[in-house]
Image: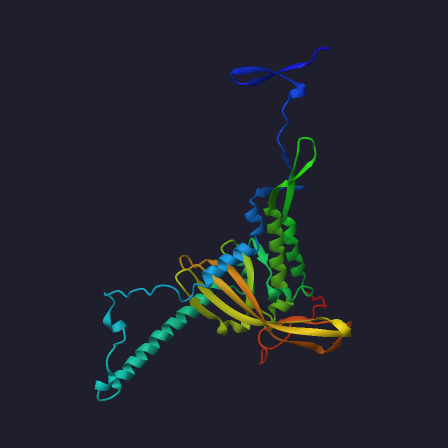
Length: 332
């Protein structure tokens, strides 16, 4: 019985191939359902929000504080801009010392004003969010306290639906689980982010003087919540030759059911660091560190009682308050 013979054109060479010996086709890359999906690298897929690698990179930048070489001052600097180093015991009165003191004080005030201006130039108030390009929202601890209270937090969770991965399909129709492809739908993500920002700006909680929060946007367009606005005068600034670091703090309280029908509680001090590139003033990212400062019974609550979880700027003082009850939905 004769076989069907196909002629395969390989350019200048012509060869004969039978159907039975035809090579298998390449694996098929399956895209997620729907339109607008584009393939991205694995690093891009996982680095859209803070990954372990990204946190490690930011830590290296931040931990270089105080290790930079001291730069030599220019010899062309005007003498009147400098303090005079001398033996003050040789002066008959303190008038020269007083003049030096006020010169130094003026210099420090000028530096302090510059730092405060620089800090506020990197931070964004809630009403100004729509003036900036935001590609994604990284919900930090402070916004997370509003999870059940504000619908924008529920919306933020939907960002993950704009990122999917698939596996290749072999020519025989089986799935090759060793070959993963990563996709993102930027149109879908933009719609979710735009709607989230709009809801955030309408939020009664986040517009209240008690709960207003400062934000930063990193160089990848990711929005991060920083610290409550009432703490802006307590922001610390430090720097090295690789990074400028803005640091703020607030406190997180939580309760949970424990053994023997009791409930436990914990209070953590949360330190937030904004890492800035001094070469271009772009925000590289945000680091959050927690340190437990107290723990114990949850005010005599039993295992079955409702449990609180909230954030507050300070442990005491006029701005010591809870965020809204997580079990109560807010009205926008």
